[in-house]
Amino acid sequence: MKKYILALAFILLIFNSFSQERVFSLQTIDFSRKGNFGPNLKNYTQFGMNIGVLFSNGNNYLPLKQGNASFIDFNFRYKRRLNNLLSTGFDIFYSGRSYELKQFAGKTFPDTISYFKEYLNASDLGSGIYLRINFNKKRGNYLGEFLDLGVSGAYVFSFTQSTIIKQDNKKIKSSARGFDFYEIFHYGIYCRLGSQKQAFIFKYRLSPLFKSSFNYPDLPPFGIGYEISF
Image 1 (cartoon, rainbow, N blue to C red):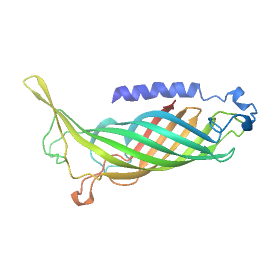
Image 2 (cartoon, rainbow, N blue to C red; image 1 turned 120 degrees about the vertical axis):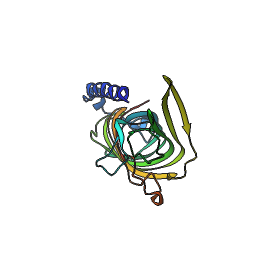
Image 3 (cartoon, rainbow, N blue to C red; image 1 turned 45 degrees about the horizontal axis):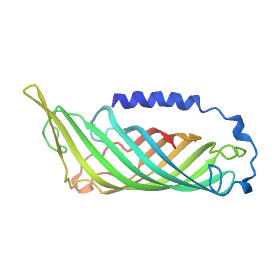
Image 4 (cartoon, rainbow, N blue to C red; image 1 turned 135 degrees about the vertical axis):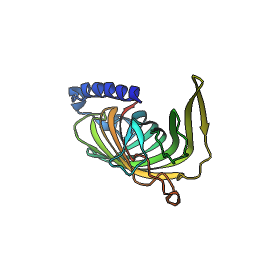
């Protein structure tokens, strides 16, 4: 997880270096001669990847090893330009999440065994819709600086427990699946603050990951990361 944090910090420095407004993006373009597909034309599509960390804001969550909860997303995005100020669109994404559980005496979830290391890993397929607010109207045929506000939902198609134990100076790895305590659908809200094809992303899961009948503490609902698009 530490390597993800270091990588994220390095990428954020790169993002900051490119956040200056490009002078040539302020040129005036006759959109009628450019067709309907382009960064600031009627239709636009792009692929992206984002990586980040997950966290909570209180003690009513499963105890995790400090800083060891992360996500990585791969997405396809469509954007529809409404006017110089507003655009709308949708995202289709795959999301992978990993949580390292803290080991302690009296542990009860998802079992009572204390491991050398224990992870919960989830994989989702989902989609979202968003509204984009553009900050620089005279940007030409460029994405410019923007704020996206969106809602999303996802289907959890894989949920596994991965463990490592030490025995006779050896590390033994194992995994388990087929649990029935988690919800297969969840939903939330997100926003992106971006410049051209780079953005900070903030996510908040509104629905619980575990079924209420099991009375388990939830996993961290907040996420913050960095996105780069192509």
